[in-house]
Amino acid sequence: MIRTDIFRYARVHRAVAILAGTSAVALLSAFFGGVEISLPSIGSGGVTTGVPFRRELPVLSAVFLAAALGGAMATHEEMATSAMHRYRRKYCMVLTLTVCVFSFGVEALAVGAEPGAIFVRSLLTWLGLALLSVRLLGNQLSWALPLASAFLLIWYPHEWWDWTSNSVTDLFSWAVAMSALAVGAAATTATPWRMKTWFRR
Image 1 (tube, rainbow, N blue to C red):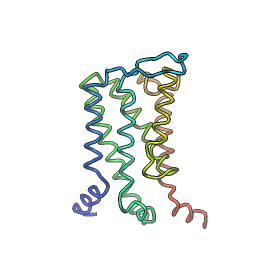
Image 2: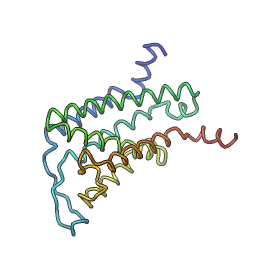
Image 3: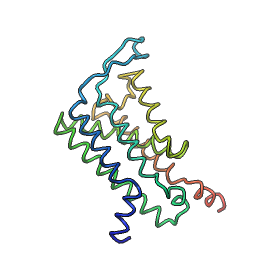
Image 4: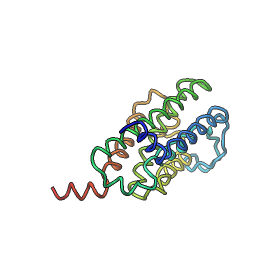
């Protein structure tokens, strides 16, 4: 595609709005991420605990990124050629990489490199869940699975599987992030049109 086509594609797929939204989330985390929100914790016997605001903010960035798959032509694009799907995949990858780099940079400057890496890890985990949610429930409900998992982490905090509070060196949390992203990417690839084609072979 030529440059004008790239800009047109980005405009139709909300690139400016997505980058603005995710940038706002990163800045919000940098300035107010340390504020603890009081929430009831089932895992600690119903005792109200304070959860740092920045732990849950990446879910917003993930939902914003999942919106890149929407747009007026989303249904038609699912029936497009493999070349178009490759371009769509590259667009989403570049957009995700841009958001991750910016979010890490802002977090690293504000509170340190480790919280920045954890922010990115949480973002990737929730992005995978958001992509899966898009495939199962539709573009308008990309938030459903990420929000459900966020509530689970809030109600049962500091468990061994809590990727928002585990250290940056926790390999299991990174494995969860990569697995969730892989499942989400696979779900995005498995469009109804493609699945019909696969089953006919």
